[in-house]
Image (cartoon, rainbow, N blue to C red; front, side, top):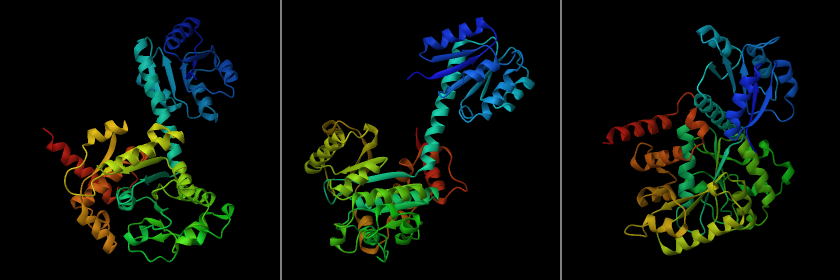
Length: 406
């Protein structure tokens, strides 16, 4: 569907010229010759952008701009004001009325087109960021092959996100038969998914979920795997979906640590995720299973940008080349995790993830930087204030890296 642009000008010649220019670019153009006509023409399908002339009878462009800002359907659309006057006072009047941009006549057609594109791009980004802000970002870590480090990455990313942004983060352990999230964070297993199994799906709310979350010193809240394997069979996909919806309402990030299969609970979590990081190691079996997983994701009709690849080196020595893996799977690898067995073994045996225990160490810094990499654009463009220590560390490392470039 073409982007709708509303043009209001009392000059028929100007309307025709601008309409022809925008029509050639593929925009749908709606025109009006005065403010009253303009207000009457705006119906259920509000335009995505408006261009208003200042000098019009009865009501000038400034007042029309104010009226548009008062209407719910046009309050947030970009507005450009055109005028033959270029004095500073006129520019200030335009911005005071709520305009996003000001162009003095006569103008170059390419300048108008460029400014329209910038404003539409900005408006689109704002809509997307607002949607992200309203609901937390769910990130799933998944592999059909065990022993690749899904739980290690999920745990360190969750803490990394909490340290970089100082915002609420939940770590959800859906490896229901053998989950280790609580163990890897040295948390006593007081509560778990087991506490939700007797509760009806429509009765799961924030109070219920908050009572069973385990609190880690990093600020991450953990929903742990059941105490007993038999409890896992009692959990339904509906309960999982409802719980994830609740967690997304009260956390900026929800990290999903998934098992190595496609059971009903796993599929419910994968469906709910905004992004899936499919993990693999540089050996034939892992690549083959990653290919199978990608085929399943295609059958589930997941968008191509929902699934990303994370390559982990869980062993020393040579493995398949990155380029060879990408060529086989026909998808680029987004994250490469170097061999770091000693640091991750400590997390398993002592419950001390390196990103939390030693955030300034090379391993801790790596996970903080990856956490920043997978963060939402909302946080990257508008970092929460005051700036968190983790964000400052990420920024300083990026600056130092930039300086080292030739």
